[in-house]
Each structure stands twice: as structure tokens, then as C-alpha cells.
Length: 355
Image 1 (spheres, one colour):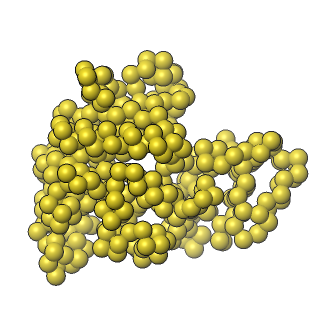
Image 2: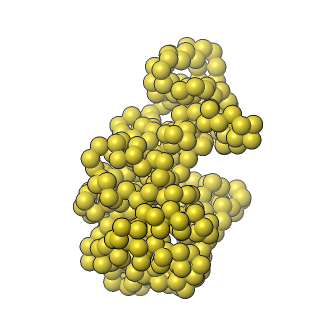
Image 3: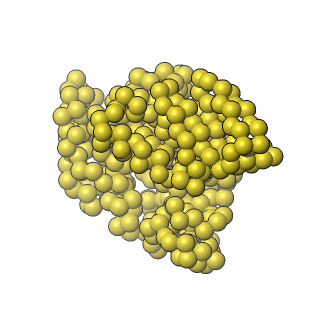
């Protein structure tokens, strides 16, 4: 069965403000120094998906920029534009309907646009096994990441071995735990981080939509009926904004039967905030991470990201300093998770010019 890639690229990446903005969100950032995140994600699939079989689902307002920034990697008709953000269930259902209606089904590999993978050879090996599992069993398959520390920022998957198979049977999806629980999960050995990577037949996930999320399926069916006609875009713009908002994790994965998991140990990081940049950037001898034009004098354990101007950090420690097009952020590294609150406050105050 033909294998397709579906990259979800509709997020805002608010924890990287002011580098990440509504006009140019996180997936368009070059955090590693090599390429923008979405291009790294596209190129990473070359070991098991043909480039012409990759789709991107993104916000309608970003579709033109996506086509431009991906530099010919993705055909224009493989960029699926959402007229409204309706969470991951709608995004995945839309792509699955596209594959069933226009490609007569296929194995559908779903990934976010912005994680970093260090060991791409091992990643390809695991993903090929996930494809095999989906094709042979007709199950919903996910990829769990072998934990390297007791993270409280990720959800977890509890699973058990399946005899004579490289995949495991999922017993439970677990919400983000407290510190003590996370340590217990790490010691247990039967828990993996939930990476948000999925593999299944497009027809199989649509069957679960019909069974578990009938309201969403009814909307997807209307869109599917219009696909390939001159009313396709009109119907998408009409129906999509009323699709109920829910994640595929809550709506389907936690309720489905016989979910399988492949465990990955390939240096995965979701690069979710400034304080996780050490997964893609090398620290200097003083523990600093830098991008753009920077100068450090007696500075320690800082994250400094310049855009247009030189940033000099003198005699400071444990600071994030980031320069965007029209805003500058300064905060302790320990407060990195609060950057989202800055974005929320600016929205509340109507200062959208800074977003």
C-alpha cells in the first residue's frame, strides 16, 4: 500500500515569541541553524515516503508562505488550507478524506511540523516498522519516545510487549504527570513519551471518526463529497469553521481499541520553548546558546537570539534575550514557559501589531 506523509503545520508557537509571530509562526523558524523546521521535517521522511506523496495541512493565511518557504518540496495542491483552526482531529480527518477520495486510500503517517530528530537513520527504521504494523494489523499505530528524564511536560503512553512482534500494545494514555509520578514512570520502564506521531490507513482512521466522532465525520463527509468538484473550496470554507474542536488524542486515540505503539529512541525533541534549544544548538563553554549576531562578556547560561541587530550580553546569567521584528523579550530561563502569557496579555490589550 502506498505511504503518504501528512505534516500538521497550523500551530502558532507562542513560546518562541517574538521570533515566532502569527504571520511567521514556529514552523518557519530556523532553530537548528540548518533550515526552517518544516523543511527539516519534510526532508526527514525521504527514507520511507516519496516527496511527491507528502501533504501539509496549514492555516489558510499561511498557505502562500508555506508554498514559498518549502522551496518546491511540496506541490501546491498538496498544501491543504484550513479556513479555521479546529484542532488536530479536524486537521487529520481532512487529510484522510483527501487521501481516500483522491488517492483511493493509503498508509497515512502524521507528524507535527516542528520536532527535532537527531538520529534520522534510527527514525526511518522505526517508522518503517510502524508502517508495517498499520498495514498488517489495520490498527491505529503511534510512536512513543523512550524517556530520558522524568518530564512533566509530556503526556505518557503505557504499553506492554506483543509476543514475537516489534510493536507494543497500548494500555493507557496518561496526562502530563507531576514530578513524583514522572519519576515513577521512568523507573517502571513501561511508559513512553507521547510524541504525537501516528501511522494508520486513511480509511481506518475515518472509520474511527464515524464511530467515535460522528459530528466531525458528518462534516468531513460533506467536504469529501465536494472533493474533485468545482465546489470543493466553497464547501470547505462553509463547513470547516463549524467542525467541533477536539484533539485526535482525546477524541480517538484514548477511546480506540487495539492501539499499537512503536518505541523510538532517536533523539526526539519537540523544541517547545527557548529553554529546550540545547537539543538543537550547542552551548559554549559558559553554557550560552546563541543565534544571530551576539557577543558575550562574562555571561553564563543565557539564550540569546538576534535577528537584525547585534545583542551584547554582559555580566548576566540565566537570561533569555530574543529580538523579533518589532519586539524584544528579556526573561529568566526559568520563566520560559510564561512567554505564552505575554502573547495572551498583548491579545487582551489589543496590541496585535506586536503579534
